[in-house]
Length: 113
Image 1 (cartoon, rainbow, N blue to C red):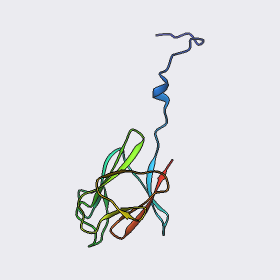
Image 2 (image 1 turned 45 degrees about the vertical axis):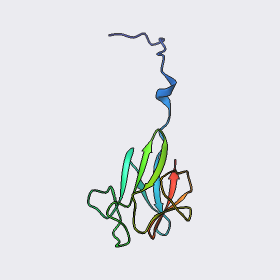
Image 3 (image 1 turned 180 degrees about the vertical axis):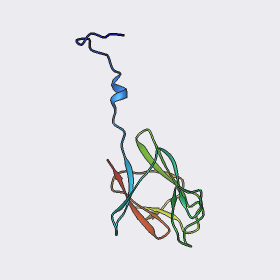
């Protein structure tokens, strides 16, 4: 099929929206972990996408969910808690760039690009 060079294709502007990249950065080492779209389980279990090797971390400690260019955190009834900017959380909380998220004693900073 031949398309004339001067023919402009119409593109739905919603298809051009840029997907944000959500990362967790470990402050003391600056190590960065890019989060995948969907649910990202955090814990000691081999089934967790982000495994934290500490006896203070529950098998499935928390879940970070990335969807529609947003990120939320949910504690999974962990023993030693999930903290957002120093405050222990329950339920689901929206995260933003620069937030500090701590799973028991392991802290990360949320980076959105």
